[in-house]
Length: 315
Image 1: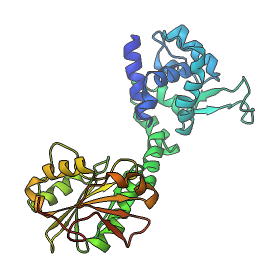
Image 2: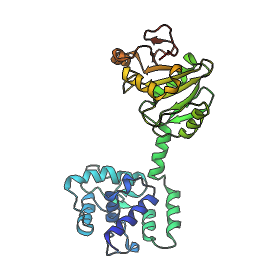
Image 3: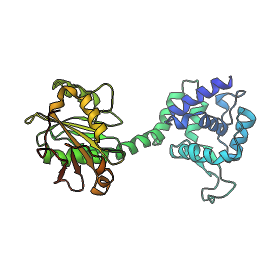
Image 4: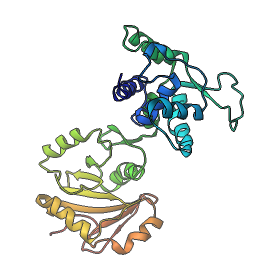
């Protein structure tokens, strides 16, 4: 088998074993082949699971697979491939001496027996069976990452009682407070039309809802972080979460007016901050006739000039 074909086949094996894209890249593929002591002159059935140090693994890559990693790559292989292989049940460290000190030069790895069976059965009718046996024994790396992602998602209760989950991190902790704290106080009865989120899990439902109200979500240009429609007032709240990026300044206000030009007489602009300390950094930039709200003081809102406290203006 040619090396390119061997690498592609091994990449698919890693994917089948539940590794993600980072752990099925060329570095990880070569690591698995070295652990199995396979190259272009061997058959899958000849795979072994002897004990190998990282130096021995790298030597096999150089001598049999044509990849000569620099000596300082040893830590990269350990931290970004073998560590995840271990967590995903593909390798076990120090099978000969589990209590070996972490700094020992004899620290080694070997393929687990279940994975060895999978590799030896490649191209045979037993491959699927052994793969299922492996999956029944371990919580794969990919499954662990999905569990971690789901655990870290930000649950948000919408005003209508529906619950959605936003991706972890970024602005979404603040957006959660905007939905659950701002809306009941300053847009009671409002309907959340749009939440900007990186996973876009419910984007299609949002587009349908926006379209049903005759509101066009801009195809070009960045939509605000949160859009809320208050039917009884015919107000369209355009809200920005300002924990890491700027608020609605003069330029952003003009941009939003252009994006929602057909509703320009219904627009209410709100810059939202996690607390007043963050707000002070941006206070000088806030556009006139907009609102500022801090999640740390949810009952209060600051209005920047204008003839009324809150509401749209003629533009």
